[in-house]
Amino acid sequence: MTSRSNSRAGLTINDPRVSQRVQGFPESVIREMTRIAALHPGTVNLAQGFPDFDPPQELLEAVKRSVDHGGNQYSITWGDPGLRASIARRAREFNHIDSDPEKNLVVTCGATEAMMASMLSLIDPGDEAVIFEPFYENYGPDARVSGATPRHVRLEWPDWHFDEEALKAAFTPKTKVLVLNTPNNPTGKVFTHSELRLLADLCTDHDVVAVTDEIYEHMVYDGGRHISLATVGSMAERTVTINGLSKTYSATGWRVGWAIAPPTLATAIRRAHDFLTVCAPHAFQLAGVAALALPQSYYDELKRSYQAKRDRLVTALRATGIECRPPGGTYYVMTDFSAFPFDDDWDFAMHLIDTCGIATVPGSSFYSDPKLGRRKVRFVFCKKESTLDETAARLRKLRPLAA
Ligand code: GLN
Image (cartoon, rainbow, N blue to C red; front, side, top):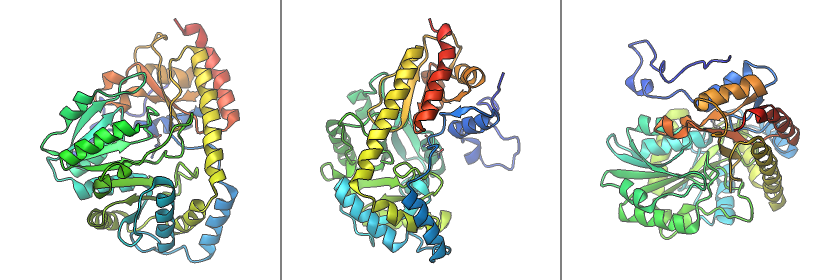
């Protein structure tokens, strides 16, 4: 039976030289599951959200050209000017966000750094951050490093609605930022205009800055629409909009992300970013210009193919007896395995690895209170059709166990 390489109980690093800050970090369960999968050759990794296929060929060619033509030294710390111009153009066309590449943009090492640099630039210790849960696990350490106290607002299974009163109650005089991820990892929820309107009103009334992670903006299904919070009411003046190349262009290893922010906030984020990483990989920034120039047909096809992958996985999960709704966006499916006789999410996830050769992410890692996720696991579907077919075949082994 597979065991975890670490456990919540054994989280403390037994060395007094280690800072309390880091002692308080959870181990990234998403990345841990990838490591466990790698220890079991042949395991289908539906844990960490990265594709098992390459970016488009023209982007691979663009990287090679970048390496041959000057992309090997630092860029300007807050981003190559050509890439910033491309980001500003795309943000205007797709998101309807106006930005000046000289004043509003910071290119970072992935959306991950954009989020951390934004939190460092906005939060003083003791400030509070409103965060929906289940959440993408990085937001916890982001809050911890910046000194923010998280205030969680629950998205409720199975349709991931939230209670308006609970949301209002989470905003206090100490609230400094709202962290919003739409389309949302791990739930797949795409926040509606009326939900965003409510968030905008609360941010405005409480003088709160919204930091929005919109990395799945092109993965919205069934005719749904992604709306950037920065375009709601007067939110542009108090929103940091984060995005990147990773998910839209299947290039999670390139580490190119960005933040679009009002000028003073962009200046602050640039400072944090400069001392964290200096710049994102220059050659990949240059290739990003080619990525952002892809025609509309690229995005249409991306959406079509991910919706088909979603349907393939959801059909297989339901046929097995694992409960889920087709997510409205992203490439994740949160599921409930209550029909199966397992103690908790880790037990089920380990059984999936050992018996079916499928790695997932235990649901507890997405909640501040692990109990809330103990009947849940997350699957990804950013995989080739053949990988998803193999998954469906392997899941059949579980069927006899379903109640
Ligand atoms: N966003 C991806 C996920 O949720 C992984 C991100 C990461 O590991 N950096 O699986």
